[in-house]
Length: 392
Image (cartoon, rainbow, N blue to C red; front, side, top):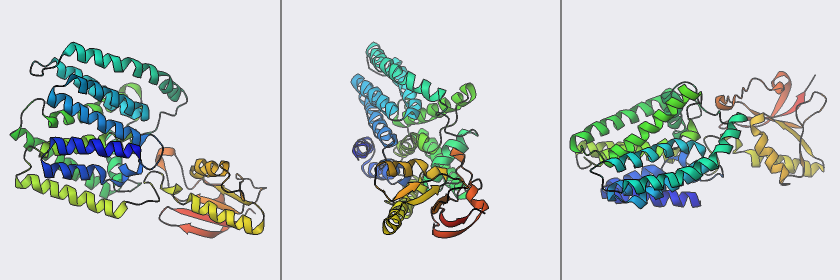
């Protein structure tokens, strides 16, 4: 919640303060009317905090260039570093703003003290490098850094953001079409904007540069170091960057009919998607965990009535959350028994959907080989609870 307040506050300052009144309000709404983004302000995984600090960093970056304020550049780097500590994928954003802040200071038309800007940058760079070096080294050693895609930036990064914004877990023609339409409008807005505003340090150019250089960073890492393309939750940093690039471009021609048309299409599209998919009980990424408490409550009540522990097994993606709840002692009449032909579990919680990113194949669980009955099914989440499993 605190991260969301941070995100809201600086999103409002970025939009209302540096765009036309109505365009600013529209951009602010689109920044928050994304159910996929809102998911991460309801779970304690660092992604929401990273977005909050990134938004604050973007505000001070804008202030640095618009007001030629050296201290704002320092604040942008500090807040960007905090975003990195919240979510290491934000390092792609931080490296780019480090470069842009220092290169901008070299321009003759930009009136800041370059030496002070450089000293400030090193002041943030050194402790950040010291803090993140060992954790990243250990993550790489344990092979837990390798979440992502191996196709290309369009399919793995941009397309994943499109489908999860639409609350779709698999790539579909619909997600592809939505992404292509967005990119076409983005290209048109940038192109038209150049006709009206050719200033080198325009906010459009700054946001566009950050977006392109961040993308280039990810592409180069893939080809040079074998890291994966950022995907879905690790690619969240691009959502505010792309939206700001679009709206700072439109800001140069917002009163034209075509500017108003692009804004209207964006508002209607994001609003409808939000109305259809916003919810209080599940997330797009971990959709299968939305029913875990309900299921465990049911099993606990069954065990309580029989005065015995209900034995359960499950497809492995459920494991961490189920184990967490049982360790807390919330369900004393539930016991985990892992798959064994000699042990009869009372219920098996089966996930009937493929999860490519974590290599879960729904066809592999042994339970599928045997006759069984269905106790309950949650079709929307692809969860089936089996009982009376005949291991014979």
